[in-house]
Length: 65
Image 1 (cartoon, rainbow, N blue to C red):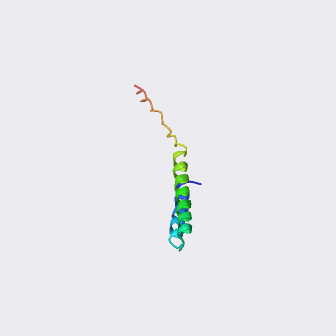
Image 2 (image 1 turned 60 degrees about the horizontal axis):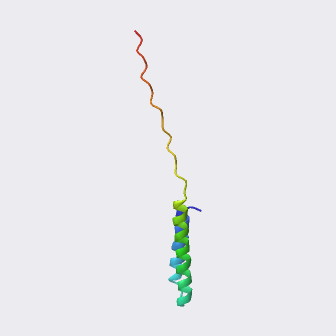
Image 3 (image 1 turned 90 degrees about the vertical axis):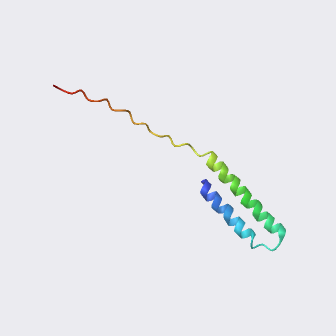
C-alpha cells in the first residue's frame, strides 16, 4: 500500500470520527487516523528511489575528407 492510499484511509477515519457521539469512540477513530498517517510516512520514507538512467555522450564523428 502506498502513502497516498494510507492517507486516504486516515482521512476516512477522521471524517468518521466526526460522526461519533461518544468521546471514547471519537478518540479511537482519531487514533486509527494517526496510525494510518504514520504508515503513510513509513511507506513514503521506505519507497525505493527511482534511479535515473544516464545516457552516454556521443562522440563527435570524425569528418571524412
